[in-house]
Amino acid sequence: MIQVEPTGVSFEANEDETIMAAAIRNGYTWPTICGGQGTCKTCVFLTLEGQSNLVEIEPREQQALDSIIDTLPKRGQGWRLACQAKATGTVRLRKIGVRQA
Image (cartoon, rainbow, N blue to C red; front, side, top):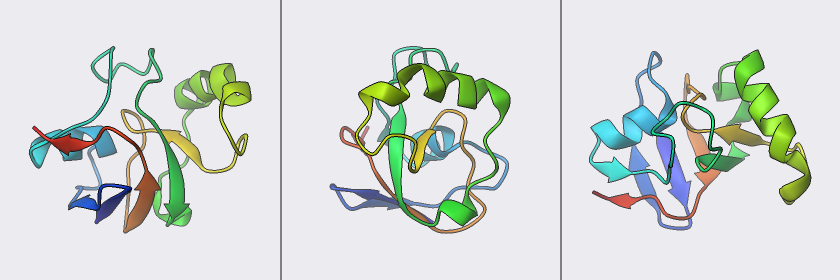
């Protein structure tokens, strides 16, 4: 289960799909410019709970996060890209702009 604050949106995610793909499959839009390629970094979110339920960061995602880390509040603490991150359990996160499609 993915729970998105501050809107209260929740949806199920399969372990083999990204959080963004799960949102779209469940009828929600997720802010993006590159369409999930991991290049625009618009889909970045802050993990509030359940960080241990996210798969390990791959090098591509880490490079993208490293390039924007100084612009984010709470530098380096729980930031992930929805187009790259996959969940294996319940995750509560903060992302503005997730809404019904």
